[in-house]
Length: 67
Image (tube, rainbow, N blue to C red; front, side):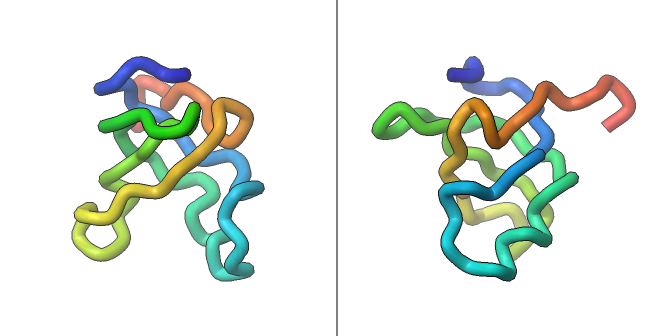
């Protein structure tokens, strides 16, 4: 699990069933919560950043400093 407050980049959308979820790949957000061993990430630039998406550790990578 990533620590709450960690900036992460989406590298995979294995847990999101929608084919449109692929548009999240490459976006950077912040881990804001943990639920059922998943990282809840907000601020991905969709819907004003109000929606949190659930990702496994394998779906995320630490964001680079320039993000």
